[in-house]
Structures are given as structure tokens and as C-alpha cells.
Image (tube, chains in turn brown, yellow):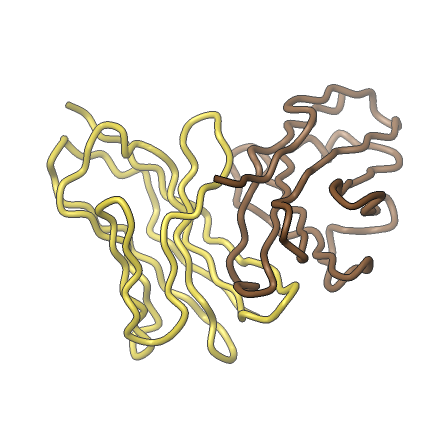
Amino acid sequence: EPEVTQTPSHQVTQMGQEVILRCVPISNHLYFYWYRQILGQKVEFLVSFYNNEISEKSEIFDDQFSVERPDGSNFTLKIRSTKLEDSAMYFCASSSQGARDTQYFGPGTRLTVL
Amino acid sequence: GDSVTQMEGPVTLSEEAFLTINCTYTATGYPSLFWYVQYPGEGLQLLLKATKADDKGSNKGFEATYRKETTSFHLEKGSVQVSDSAVYFCALTTGQAGTALIFGKGTTLSVSS
């Protein structure tokens, strides 16, 4: 069964450093998303992406964040200058043209900012 | 704005007990409703969904019915197993492309043998 994959599974970085989280969505999906889950809290939407542009973003997704689809398979989330409060689990998701409302999630990347 | 409210956990049950996790929502338009499950140390897995009023989603013995009149989507299972221990999230989306999933806070279920 096709699945969303994410790398790395765990990323440790120093405050102020840039990080790039990578995702490979399901191959025929056209809509892509990033969410985050701070430990013990609810899953929060960050951004959605379609046709090489951002469709929607939340208040969390400020100028420190950016997304990119650099090739036909990868979807990345970049945090330019990490803060302690960026420590969280980051989930990538994707959905298809035929079932746009049904999002399939990757296993997540745990980001720890020291 | 749109929101999802789930019952507070944790829910602790014995194996073979009946499970209900309550979920109510507030939304403009006609949302699609979802239950996701997160097993320890893993990501979110879609458990079931319903896209219109009176639809029943079901999977792995779990069921939930989309009740527009009560704006609810309660998750039920007739006989839980230890392997069902996980965090369950109710969520909604308005169903348009690129629209955010809005999650409830999650309910932790712990099943003992």
C-alpha cells in the first residue's frame, strides 16, 4: 500500500540553525500539507500546497517557514532560524485529486531544538 | 471558526468492553469528518471518515455516524482489544482542496487484559 515517507525520523539542532524536513508524498497525490504536534498537544495545521504554490497557511507559518517541491517526488519544509518553541513532531500529509478531503500522513519527524 | 471538541481522557477499559469516544464539532458549510489514530511512537493513521449527514464510517470494528442534527461524530467499538490502546483524534475539513484538517485535542485510550 502506498504511503507517505518522511526523513529524518529525528533531527536535533541548535537554536538559530536552519533545518529542512523532507517528505515523499504518495506518488499520484497532488495536494500536500505540513502539520506539527508539540508534545502533549493537539495536531496543528501549518500549510497546504498545490500546483507549486501555497494554498493556505496558518498563523504559525510565519516568515521563518517555507515549503518547496524541488522535484517530482519530494516536498520539503524549511525553518530558517529555529527557536526552542519549534521543537515538535512535524507531519507531512498528502491527498489525491479524487479524494481531496482525505489526507494521508507520514510517520513524522521529531525536531528537537537545543 | 471551525472547531472540534473531544471528550477528555484518558479512557481506561478492560478488554472486550464497549468503547465510546465523544466528538462534537462546529463548522460552517458541510464538513467531512474523520477519526485518526496514533499508536505509541507512530504517526497518524486514518481510521474512518464520513462525508455527509447520516453517513456511517467503519473500519477495524470501529464505527462513527455523522449526525448533523447534534453536530456529532462519536466513535464506538463493541469490544476493544489491548492492541486498540492509542490516542484517537477527531477531525474535520470543509472538503475543499488544500483546506486544513482541524483536530480535536485527542483522547487517550488504554485497554488492559
